[in-house]
Image (cartoon, rainbow, N blue to C red; front, side, top):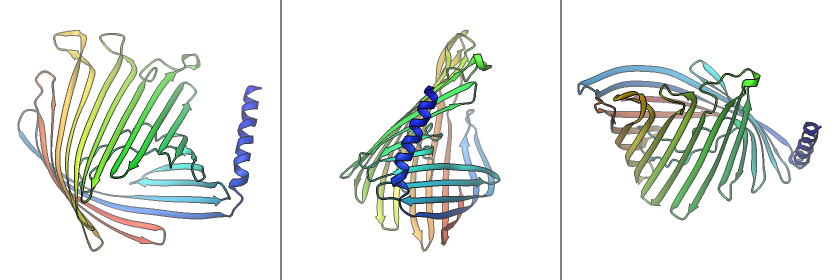
Length: 359
C-alpha cells in the first residue's frame, strides 16, 4: 500500500509539473563531434635505480559522438530530453540519457549526473592537470541546481540485487568581482546484502569521498589560480594483519599563474604537489603489523598557447618527480616537452577536429 501511495504521489507531481512544461512547441535538434588523434611520445626519465631511461611510441585513433535533444519551452518551465552516444575507437557507449526541467531559478535533471569540478586549471598549459572533486558524481541519479545561488546537489542510489550503492555530492560556485571560488564534496558507500546471496568481500562496507576546492583571482592580464583535492577510500576487504578495512588517502595541490599576452595568446606557469598514503603496507620489521607508506610527487611546468589562423598551437614543458618512503625506494623523475596542435571546422551542427600531440 505504501509503495502504491508513493507511486501515485510521484505521478501526481510529474503531471503537475508537466502541464505547464509542455504548453509550448517542442523543438528537435541534433549535433555531433568527430575527433582524430595522433600522439608521438619520446620521454626520458630516471628510474628508481638512478639510471637514465627513455621510450618512444606513437598512436592514432578517432572518437565520435552524436547527441539528440528535444526541447519544449512553456510559460514557466523549459523541458529537455537528451541522449548521447560516444565511440572511443571502437568502444561505443551511451554518453548519457537525461530529462531536465528548468525555470528562471531552478533546474532538476534525471539521468547522468555531473556537477563539474572545482579545479582552476591554468589556461595555457596542456601538460598534466588535476581534477578537484569530480570522481563520484557522474553516475545515474538526480541533480538539483540553483544557478543564481551557485548551489548544486546530486543523489544516486543503485541496487543490483545483492549490492546497494549510494552516492551524493554538493557543490557551490561564487563569483565576486575578480574572485572566482568553487567547492565540491562527494561521498559514496557500498553494502552487500548477504541474505540475498551477496558475498562479504571488497564491496561490503567500501566507502569513498572526494573534496575539492578552487579559487582564481583575475588581475588582467595576470591571473592566479589555486586548486586543492583530498580523496579517501576504503575497501570492505580485511587486511592480512588484522580486521581493519584497507584504506588509502590522496591529496593534491596545484598553483597556476596565467599571463594573457593578447587576445590570441598567453603563457602559464604551474606547480603541483601530491601525496598518496597507503595505510595498509606491511611493516618490514614485523609482517604481522601494518604501517603507512607515502608516495610524494611534484610537477613544475610551463605552457604557451597561441592561434595561427585556425590552428591552435600549444607548447608545454614539465619536470615530474616522485619518491616513496618505503624501505629502499629511490626517487623517479622525468622531463617532458610537448606540442599540441588542434584544428577544428564546423559543418552545420557537426564539429570536426584533428589533434596532433608530440612530446
